Length: 348
Ligand code: AMP
Ligand code: MG
Image 1 (cartoon, rainbow, N blue to C red):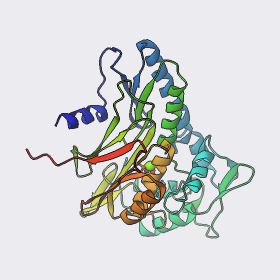
Image 2 (image 1 turned 135 degrees about the vertical axis):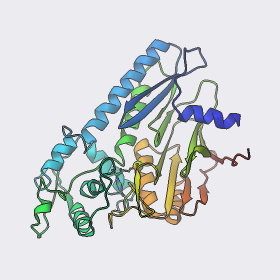
Image 3 (image 1 turned 180 degrees about the vertical axis):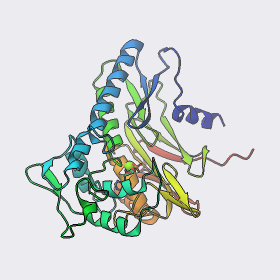
Image 4 (image 1 turned 90 degrees about the horizontal axis):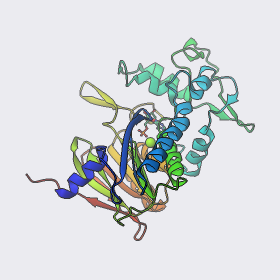
């Protein structure tokens, strides 16, 4: 029980008072469209706090331009003229390159803006019309990167007004499945570059990166919640030093129609919520936050069986909760500095 409480303290973003040698400074703030928590160790508390402030600035600088849903962002500007070749938003090329490097382009699509918009998860939460969905999927799949660094969507022969740049099905970039991970990586590099910080953990809730080893030599512990009982910790991932972990789940953003759950992780080939997985967590010492963020979304789409195979082949730790509520785990390789321990359900 004490172990579980310790984990919960970590993930529920408790701000610890004061700072002795052994206590970290913990700062939680609204950022990246959620609450981000930075836990950092160092001897000079005010210098550690200044470094944490800087890391929040860096995160905003990375994520702001990549947010398709903020009208003033570079991504929104790109999406306003989808059929005209324009420069990619800052750092978008890094995300596109990494999707290719990880070989998950079949399951992770950075161009689902027209499709995700149809569900309106934050607003009306409506089921899309079948014909709209099919057209949005087709238009979204026509993204072209050009050698000069610009990109555009090629028009369909079909001149449907819904596809016009200001129409409801106009294609666009949606980098929301990867931008948080990229921002966490940048924050970690910012903290790494600070003389004041000796070790740190940065978490956006769904993604976490760690930096270095805690001063007492203890491991970083990250609790993974039960997708159907968020107060219960299902498993704990531990990192000895640098690492990254991301969870994608069908409980993070969803609505229900006729008893069916429509959640925000979409199969790019159909535009429908990916079925068969409730939550998927991937972690590794050699993964970046960007990698783990892309992979949690992509492997969720590919399904439990394929996800287990990918993790085993790539030496990553994985935990999947499938549609029947079964928990499946691929442990990290021995001596990789990452361990997964499943928590026994509480009996009282
Ligand atoms: P995550 O929470 O990291 O799993 O990312 C989910 C977000 O990524 C969604 O809210 C969408 O904006 C976007 N998204 C949904 N499905 C996909 C997909 N198959 N590939 C890439 N991005 C997606
Ligand atoms: Mg993701």
